[in-house]
View (cartoon, rainbow, N blue to C red):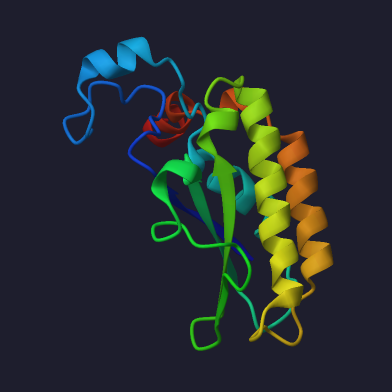
Length: 174
């Protein structure tokens, strides 16, 4: 089983270490005044989960779960950019992929510690997996409760220091 996070963030969300990025819509002065940061690195989370899930199977119809993680100040964006969560599960049988949306409200998580943000990430992931049971089109033999338990166990055992951009870079360079 493979796991992937597709991060979709509002312009107000800034990842730790990216304050001076050229692609940022806000000038660096904005980020000096607004100290909120997304402190986790989702590719590092994916690596951690993939290591734990690599030898497990939760049904023949799904080989990859994709969490579409939306982080934003949803109230300021309105209903067009980020739709309600109901019905936001997509099953792609030809590719054996299952996509589900999880959301984190930026106003609630921007000042949390990395450990607290990981707990919020875990809750959003488990909620996204939970949406599968209500999906209109879903895989018949996917064991969503077992997958949810495995992901929750792996996230609880994760060391937050290993889920940063710097830790991931060190793994790649080693």
